[in-house]
Image 1 (cartoon, rainbow, N blue to C red):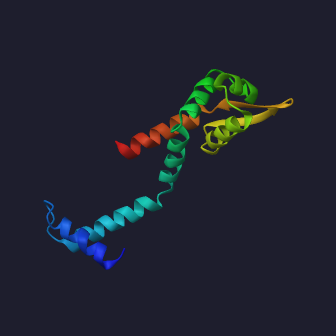
Image 2: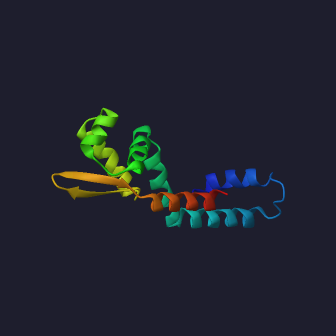
Image 3: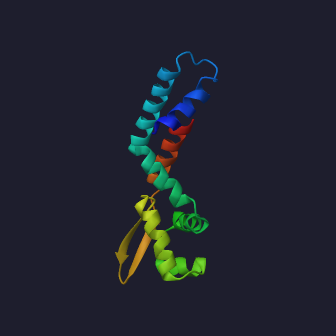
Length: 128
């Protein structure tokens, strides 16, 4: 952080209630921010939330929670091309929310409920 920006922030902090030592308070806040930025759990949560931030991916998860499906079934349900479906599946799989396996000539996918619930629990712990 450059000196000018640091001083701007300190000028604002001095006006906050309960701040007796601006330098010490600023340093505590910087340490907290640095610690949280380095926390790998937030990376996992970001990947989880990014995976859920698309309507088609939410629909795919909803379809897969009923039973495992092959890509062509998802194509039919979503009226989407195979490359588009595969793109969404890759994001969901990277987040650990689904898994794929070969079943004959087709790849099938299923919903990993345990990972979904683990991420929800982690999200709850971090934000509540």
